[in-house]
Image (cartoon, rainbow, N blue to C red):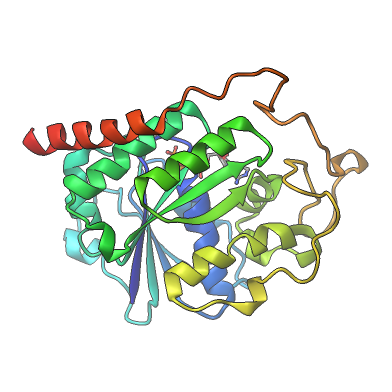
Length: 287
Ligand SMILES: Nc1ncnc2c1ncn2[C@@H]1O[C@H](COP(=O)(O)OP(=O)(O)OP(=O)(O)O)[C@@H](O)[C@H]1O
Ligand SMILES: [Mg+2]
């Protein structure tokens, strides 16, 4: 059984989105994933409750609940047939909680958004994982997911440069796509949407699956040449069933932070960020 922890203390970075879509992918492949939700908001548990009986089963454990009628071990028990446990963690998790949260994790996924604030929070989080939770880079347990990416933005380029400097692999680049929002509402993942709707999103999970399992999944490979210039649009697409109104056709708004002539590169200095990682983590360790 593989235990995968999704964490980033920054709220809204995509932890639940990654956790539920990974569970959706595994369930759709006949695996038996369990979603363990440590977030009192209970978003992962709510998503599982929306699933229909015909859909591939995913069990949810409300680990955030304090149940005085049972022991903690009983509350958190994993079914014998579980193949994966995916742990969805809350925002604002503290460095001192990281060792416990990550101790048995085979893989730790850190989703990060391409924004200055998120990049700096991510640098702290990685630092804490390395120095407080004592995870060594060579273990290859930590993988960063660049989430809600719009490629043609300066912030995206800053994010990718920054992630390279950390020496932690970027295991997926996930675009900003309304499919994730729509799927979450329906209790499904992009892997359970019709392929003509979500093909581009599904393909972006290929590198992540390869990193997690050690083997590529050919069903996630790009089918052929991608459709011309559909690129990293954040446009809306019809959900499964195609009941969308006509105005839901792909739109291509000007990308946020798009390069303007003469615009300054976003103020993300990788050298400073890496120093911050070390300084912060050493301080956290000492405290
Ligand atoms: N790739 C994406 N494309 C579009 N929307 C996204 C994407 N990833 C996440 N979102 C949306 O961003 C919002 C925040 O995502 P999510 O709830 O997964 O973050 P989180 O890290 O779990 O937040 P919290 O810290 O509050 O638990 C949600 O509305 C989600 O649907
Ligand atoms: Mg969440």
